[in-house]
Amino acid sequence: MFNRLFGKKKQEDKTEDEVKLEQSLQKTRSGILGRISTIFQENQITDQLWEELEETLIAGDVGLLTTEELLTATRERVNQENIKSANDAYLVLKQEMVKVLLTDEPLHIDEPRILTVVLVVGVNGSGKTTSIGKMAYYYKERGRKVLLGAADTFRAAAIDQLKIWGDRAGVEVIAHEPGADPGAVIFDAMRASQESRKADLLIVDTAGRLQTKYNLMKELEKVKAVAGKQVHRAA
Ligand SMILES: Nc1nc2c(ncn2[C@@H]2O[C@H](COP(=O)(O)OP(=O)(O)OP(=O)(O)O)[C@@H](O)[C@H]2O)c(=O)[nH]1
Ligand SMILES: [Mg+2]
Image (tube, rainbow, N blue to C red; front, side):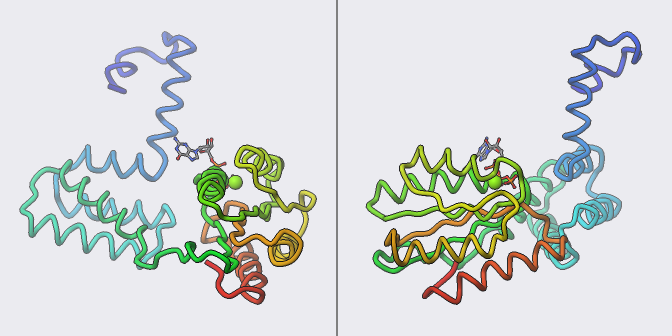
C-alpha cells in the first residue's frame, strides 16, 4: 500500500498531504514493532530472519535475556507446529510477547479495609495515567475509598492530567508542585490515606521511563521503599 501510494510518484510531485502521510507511516515503520513487522513481511523463515529479529529486539532495548527467551520460544513453536509462512511465525512471536508481559502474580487489590498501594510504572506514553483514571472509577463504584497520588512531578501538566481523571472519577488527588520529589508525594499520599482521608486504595501515578535509565529506575526504588515502609503491601 505504501509503495502503491507513493512509490511511483517523484518526491517533488507529491501533495502536502501525501508527504505528511508518508512521514507518519515512516515513523510507525521505524518504531520497534513496525521494524519487526517489516522483517516478517520481507523474509521467508530463514536464519537471516531470526538474526534480524534478534538485532531489532536488542536494539529496541528489549534486553538480552528477554530477547533470547522470545526467540527460543518462537523458534521452537514454529518448528513444532510446522509453520511455513513468515506471517504465521509473526503471530506466534506476538503471542510469546504477550506471555512475557502477563504475570502469574495477581494484584492483591481486593482486600477491603487494608490500605493497598498500587504504584503504576511503565515507559513513556504507555497509558499509565489513563488506566489510573479508569481504575479509580472502577473501584470507587465498587465501594472502595480511593485516593490518587500524583508522583509524576516530572512532565509538565502531568499533575493536572491526573486531577482531571480524579474529578471524573470523583476521587481526591494528593499532589505537590511540578518538579517536587516523588518520594515526598508518596509519603504525604500514604499519610493522607492512613490518617485524614482513611482511604483503602491508593493509586500512585509515576513519570514514564525506560528501564535503561538508571537514575530514574533508582528513583522508583526509592518511591517504592517509602510506600513499603508504611504499608502491609505495596504492589
Ligand atoms: N486507544 C487507546 N489509547 C489509549 C489507551 N490508554 C491511553 N491511551 C492514550 O495514550 C496516550 C498516552 O496515555 P497516558 O495515560 O497519558 O500515558 P502515560 O503512560 O501516563 O504517559 P506518560 O505519563 O507521559 O509516561 C493518550 O493520548 C491516551 O489517550 C487505551 O487503552 N487505548
Ligand atoms: Mg502519565
